[in-house]
Image 1: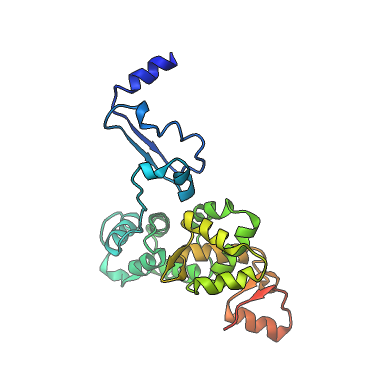
Image 2: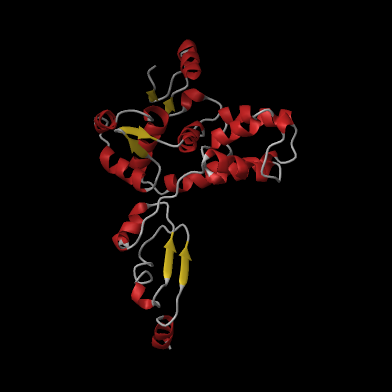
Length: 255
């Protein structure tokens, strides 16, 4: 029966779409094009480039999905916030502020747009102020999937970069964290594969929402008492803690 099905598939043009794959073991036979008819297509999406490398991605075309451009992002946000493709004039540019916050991330645009559907302008301003202090949990939950797949040391390195080293020189960061007994280069390579990090002109760059997710993880260590968190980067928190002599954080950003 199995041989019959394989023989039948080889005579058919097949389209297979596999979304958000995190393990290559079950893909290796499936992506063998000889199993399917001429003109068949296999589309595999993953948060981790390493998964694609392990199935022999050099045989296929690799495409990295970019964030939405400003015009597309604004249209998607409007469709979820207003149920139309344009913004009412009386909202005085507020939609563009949310689009800027989302940085082209479709999930964030849809979540925040849907949250604001039918809400008054004061509620819009209130949410914008809240996002500066507290990230949206639904967005952060999805973004944290890649972080959750890191081992303990990689998580530590990631949090250092999110809290202190975004935009810093790659070589300097490696020297600093290697001095703390971390295997920094291996960790950074993994972040690149998982699209948690990019390198531009030898500087470590991170999407604002990814950085916010990392800092949010540290904040959750002690939501009410910043001095009990492992890392401090906010100048106001640092000043208040030194003033009140309640510093317990292991790492504090220098300004």
